[in-house]
Amino acid sequence: ADPPGAAPSPPARAPVTLSPVAAGIAAALAAATAYGINIVYARMATQQGVSAADLVFLRVFLMLGAVAVAVMLRGRSLAVAPTARPAVVALGVASAGVGLAYFFAVSFVPIGVAAILFYTFPLLILLASPFVEGGRFTPHRFAVFALAFAGLAVAIGPRLGDIDIRGVLLAGLASTLAAWQFFAAARAGRAVGPPVLMFWSHVVIMPIAGVFAFALGGIGWGAIAAAWFASAMTVAGYLAGFALQMVAARRAPPALIGLIFCLEPV
Image (tube, rainbow, N blue to C red):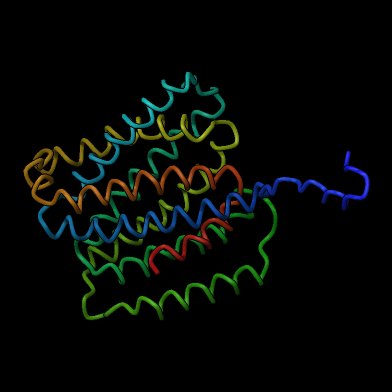
């Protein structure tokens, strides 16, 4: 109680908490930033002789180790309910395809060209959402995406003279797989926590990345060592970006997260 004659104490403030969707938006913004760092250094690494497949294999290998150690230290289980396993496998396959296709795309065309083509995936998510997630398509959502994509094109300003058809096709493939990845992450994230989801999706990614890496001559450890800084930044950006993307997928709808990810190339 306040002493006699003293001014009453101010009421205690309730702690500020974010709603699930707001937390998902914050995580998506942070993930977009981390992925933006990742792809710039990925192009630098490939220009220094590191294979795109090697980068994907390296980051998956390190992600598996980091998540496994974190889960064991926290005493958590890695069990996945049978009903969630198809979505986890789909997430792993899509994630492997996105990484390989996008990294190979920036080996053939400038980042600006690849990004403009790749970032059609929010439109694919928007168009597919009524069929995959339910709900209905609304014109104002399409208008918001069109405005964001137009701003993205102006900001990046790709040089059309640098087009290589291989890079165009690979960026288009990466865009399609990215839309699939977002839906799979949203579905799996409803039943599986982010650490477990990251672990098992990367168990799926590992052999896919390994096959591509060894088909192209094996892991080029010498090239990775020579481009160690660019390789390390690529891996760090990916680890942070993927973890934050899984957090966002649990809390916000895919169409909203996809729109926020238009900030990544900027």
